[in-house]
Image (tube, rainbow, N blue to C red; front, side):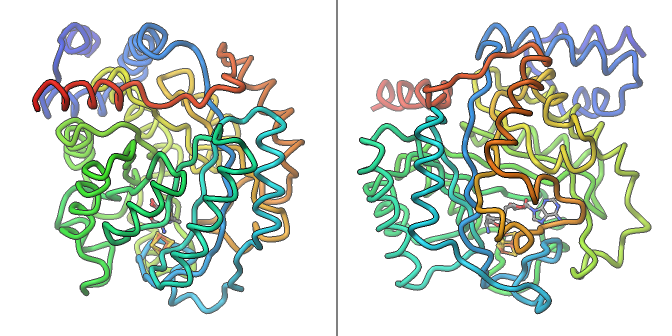
Length: 367
Ligand code: SAM
Ligand code: SF4
């Protein structure tokens, strides 16, 4: 097995079959993969981690994704939105502690009030941080006009996971209606690129009905799409969702975690200069999950800055970690763990995707 792994890792490009072999690798093989990914990370993006303070702005959502604990149809959830004052307090914390970037995430809504509210927030954040904050949005599918408005108001990056790049698999994870349309999601990603965002996407790993071949295709999808950032992690079941009925068909959580680490490592080798997040879902399975992801290629981490009183309301899946820790406790423990993982923290640096700048250069050359 190790010989085949050596041969694949010596190549410049991977085929789908190569990726499947890497994803199926045994402990010896996967250690070689991790070593190579660590070398690529150090060479292309450095042994540095960038913080994005995460504000889970609202759990109100109009959609009904079958996997998600805050889907509209889950009437056990108390719905909230964080007030403007509380958001700005979290922003101040981030700014004072030299987190040079933020992620504003929420359920999907696109009514005028919501769009205006987010626009106003972006303008205020830009004002109180002297335009120095790198703002990422993760608010689902919006119109081109809304994407443009939010970009003008100060957002720089947008995360919209494709969730599963295989169209048939996507259809099994979502209701069959126009608000959950695969092509519309794909078009949204294209629009975000056209409008000028640093664009991030991602998938869940270990979903029911998902094969290793699907995961290999997901990685090739990111590459083909020329994506700037990726956030991916294990699927974790939630008992109040329709997908929970397939819980006995899932691979073990440990296997989902190990597959996720392999996905990160392969992606780092495939797309050397992109930003890859060490996601919270990895920490939900393994307490040191995010640090392990940093060792094999991730370079972004999202400490949770959502006011603690709202966190119970944003349970996307079971065992979500850090739901009762204040931001300052998280910061101290993260610092120690990141240092242990051998990285430094890029305090005061936005850590924008290097790939984005390369992509912009290429675009200019082609014009
Ligand atoms: N509503 C926006 C959207 O869907 O793009 C952003 C917020 S949504 C909660 C953020 C991500 O949570 C989704 O893209 C999905 O991949 C992830 N997620 C939802 N339910 C999950 C689950 N059960 N396990 C792992 N990740 C999950
Ligand atoms: Fe809403 Fe996003 Fe959850 Fe889907 S994944 S139900 S859009 S919050």
